Length: 122
Image (cartoon, rainbow, N blue to C red; front, side, top):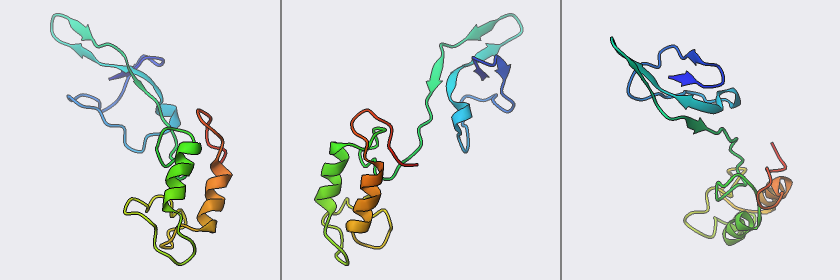
């Protein structure tokens, strides 16, 4: 396995699959596989790896915190001390206290940045 922009072989990448454990932004890029034999070599097409940080308020996991995420959050909001309103409402309980309330809403608002924009929080 070779990262194209470095054209260096990756140590240990010598099997049918390649896994990058604990992926980091520095791993982002295009990769290709070079298979060599006694008489020749074959080079695969490039495969791209994009690394995106996970932000809890990105409830639809599309890389932004927007009105779609707000709709999901709103459907789960049930107030302090009340269990979440739906069976898929664990994710909006950002402080993991068993409810979706104003504390969770404050976290959501701190990340809201609109469609196709990176989240405003870290």
